[in-house]
Length: 388
Image 1 (tube, rainbow, N blue to C red):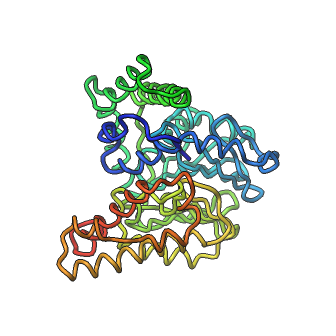
Image 2 (image 1 turned 120 degrees about the horizontal axis):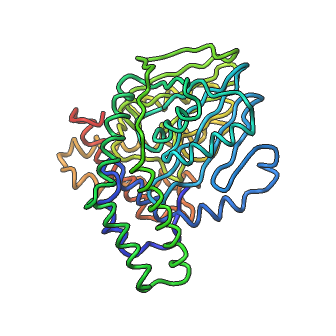
């Protein structure tokens, strides 16, 4: 998970450079890069002793044949998704593929430490780039791999990868300008402490690599699409892929292993440490969470964050959605404007009940972004204007 100990100079000026639908989510990552690295370093060594790892990722074994790969962030603005790995009798089934292809290449190396079987299937949970830009690495390594996604998601993957690549790498793009500003600030040493200089150097290197990889990105579109649900008997393991409709994105799919009781939840559940709420759909999201809470899980792998063994966090996010909807609807009935609703929505009691949302790596302004975004999405969704 990303982190930054200090608010970097010029952070607000750079906000427009981030993906416009999830800008606040990425700004929160910008603030947390160093804290996350420190937290990862503090993990007890025996927690990872029996599974592969590298400088930016750790494998967690879920069952005899199921694994999760948990990652450090790609940049101060963009995370890598969690990745699921299911080893069958003859091949491997993978869930999501990261933000940058280089990370997917590294994941493939980790998978090869688990098994020498080829990857035959790659499913994408939703269209957001941090879950699918790396698909090309799997196609390169395993030319016969089958790429799977919900029908509309497949179309959005192609469209939005094209959009993001061209928006980001255009010669006069705001993202390139922001990188240039960072480079100039570092070169002049403008008001930077030693700690800030070290963090800035890391951020610049990450963003330079991101620009290079986005510029070279080859886009691959899932060729196997489904509507509603796709059930597979994958070499002895039953896999149920379900599209829940709008939640974090317009179509969010989960992957459920009923015998093993493992749920790969995609970004329906994110603990980073806060949920990702930019461009979300809280009215329907609340309904989805109620249904997921009824699933008898043994392990739950969120789209970002640690593997979970119960529904405590599912209930926490559900309570956040329910409180948002109840309180926003009451204000709508009073005739309040969107601006008033965003200013007046108070969710501090909900936050107080979830320790991970109150840690030192969750500044109050990150919570304010989450609260105001949910207020806006609930306001339009409850009134039938989108964001349902």
